[in-house]
Amino acid sequence: MEAAVIILGVVAILAMGLVVVLVFQLSNARSAGGNQDGNLDHQVKEMRDGLENVGKSIQDLKTDRTAQSSEMKGLMTNIGSQMTALNSTNAALREALANSRVRGQWGERMAEDVFRVIGFLEGTNYDKQVTIPGSESGAGSRPDFTIHLPQHKKLNMDVKFPLENYMKFMDAETKEAEEQARNSFLKDVRDRLKEVVGREYIDPSQGTLDYVLVFIPNEQVYAFIQQHGAATIDEALRNKVVLCSPMSLFAILGVIRQAMDNFALEQDSNEILSQLGAFNKQWTGFVRQLETVRSRIESAQKNFETLAGTRLRALQRPLNRIEAIRVERGLPIASDNSEIIELPEPELADALADGD
Image (tube, rainbow, N blue to C red; front, side):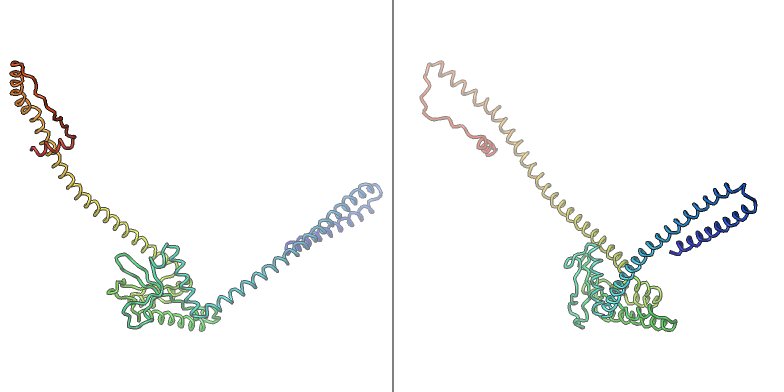
């Protein structure tokens, strides 16, 4: 809109200039005489046409400015409605997060979203609100999440979301108010860490790791702690408490998932090697039995060759002499009603083996 107003001003100045030039030329023409009347009329006509064009341009600019003004009003109305809705949503969100129980539920939902992205399943890779066995403090020793690790290890995690004094710091208008809100916020963080340390989240006898996780479900709050609470973080690490944000929790769980996959692969490899050992044992027995059967087959083959060769010829010689004597004496063959029994091949093999 401002650009259109400037253009209209420039056009108006040019129009006024043209009018001044026209008046000046008319004055000169009158002083010069009638010989230049034709040229003057032509110039006046051209200037009149130019002024009409300028007038049309000004009118078009006015029309465009009116349309742009209407469009701008509609756009501003739309932006105003969106800002109103955004302010309402922001107010509702701040009102909801003012409740510590709602903040805790929201933080747990954020943690579960990270678990889901990593691929963890509730009941398989992690559990919620499981009371520590043998806990002396009862319900107080119930971590928000228990992450299951290989070799029956586990890692406990609590969700903490100190927000009230952080919001006061963000809304503070003076340095004194900022300082007071910052100190109060860091005290809140230390108090929440003491709550975790006072519980039985670290107990190697129960299979836990030597550390416990404290999840801060907001990157800005976590960054504020990192920036202004270095001493608080050092104290937490001395107590074996690790603070993490959504991004750092994603990284930690990613490492855990990779370790679990590697452990599962190692277990599968060990199972395969064990099965190969069992197969090798059976294979050795098979080869030994195969060698025994081969030896027996070779022995049976040798016995069969002896029967079919030497023994058969030894029996055949006297039988041939007896048959020659019978033929020589012209004796008939005695009648014999008995049938010749042929043994099946398996029974023949068994008979040969028994003959050994």
